Image 1 (cartoon, helix red, strand yellow):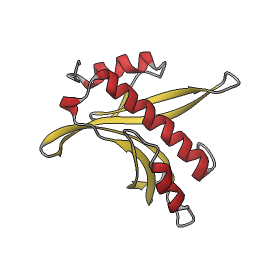
Image 2 (cartoon, rainbow, N blue to C red; image 1 turned 120 degrees about the vertical axis):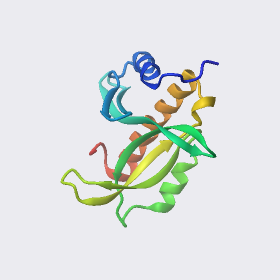
Image 3 (cartoon, rainbow, N blue to C red; image 1 turned 30 degrees about the vertical axis):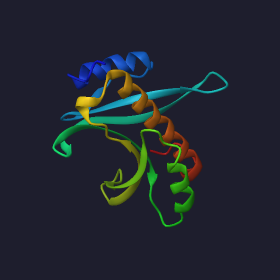
Image 4 (cartoon, helix red, strand yellow; image 1 turned 30 degrees about the horizontal axis):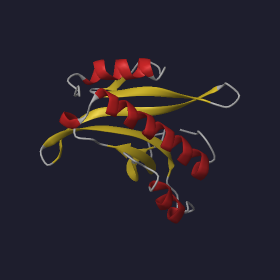
Length: 150
């Protein structure tokens, strides 16, 4: 197993293997990948996935936080169904983040995330996790928010 020594280099390799756009550093140490899904008609749909190292997130160990926004939380969301949807994740979980709208107003956002311990994560595992985060977020967007609006 080859663990993650250099996040950017690992993300470059993963992006190539997933035919995603090269990772873009959108804030210090925060990388954005645009993961493509090939649809039945041959066209593509994309899902943004953010990846960063969070120092000492789990019992003093660094974690790789991988997440993707699904939509803005609102009281009309069927949280029972959302919780049931969470059961399909192997590496992922669904949560709500404090966030900002595009016009800088406070909001809460439904997010799919995973945060494996960095020292125990191989490039192969990180690729699976990134794919699952993207796929789960895409499904949640469609089922609960009417499609890609983020």
